[in-house]
Amino acid sequence: MRIRPTSARGGQPPAATSAESPAALSGPDGRRLPASPRRRRPDLAALLILGGTAATITLMLNDSARVSAIRITRQVTAGQPLSRAGMEEVRIADIGIDYLPWSQHASYAQRLALVTLLPGTLLTTQMTATPSEEITPGKARVGLALKPGHSPAELKAGQRVQVISLPRQDPGDHRTTVLAQSALVDAVSDPGTHDPPRLVNVIVDAALSPRIAAYASNGQIVLAYLPAAH
Image (cartoon, rainbow, N blue to C red; front, side, top):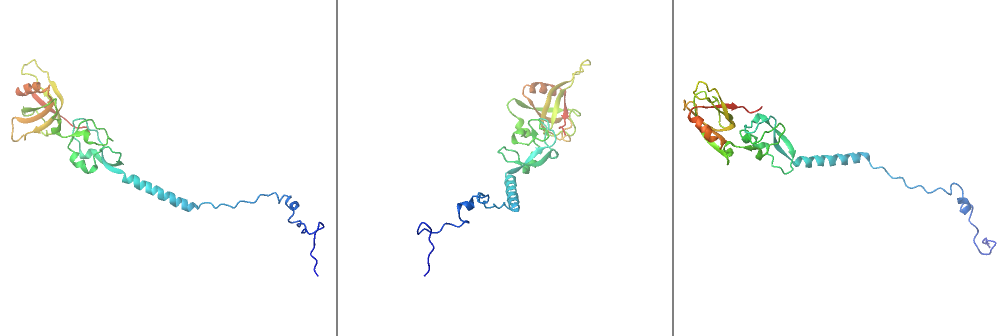
């Protein structure tokens, strides 16, 4: 017959062993907090791949929002014609401004500058005009019948000229006067078909047209070509 061990207090199970007793947990090892599980560091290669992909997408989106525009590379003074040599293509952000697309640069190469265009200017429609568009209120077209030598040989429509009055036939009169500082040549006859005179139409301020016409009727008008700034 087996006898089950009992405690001295009758029927109670024996006390816990020393390994399970609170006294055994009171030492240095018993006071140590349980270590937290170690976190794994993100994979560096994966982060680099994700960053490169994001940068590529950003560049693609930015490039798709760009347009091809016309940039002026040579100064053009107001009233002077533009030239193909003074333009270049540039890619810019599309921010809603009506910059002229590069695809139209050939058609704008012979237009006139309404304002002085400095190198680096992005061209817009409002900065240019055709010769016929300069006929506005306050302007007048004056026809001149010029003697040989009173106008440049290579004069063409769209160029700018000074309109100069010559002195009278009086021996003591040597005065010349600039009647119009920058007149637009609107039309020029072929020198071979009208020699003399050469027929030239110029556009000037309406206030100047009577005086210019009076000098022209006396053969006292000379045109001096104003080359465009390059």
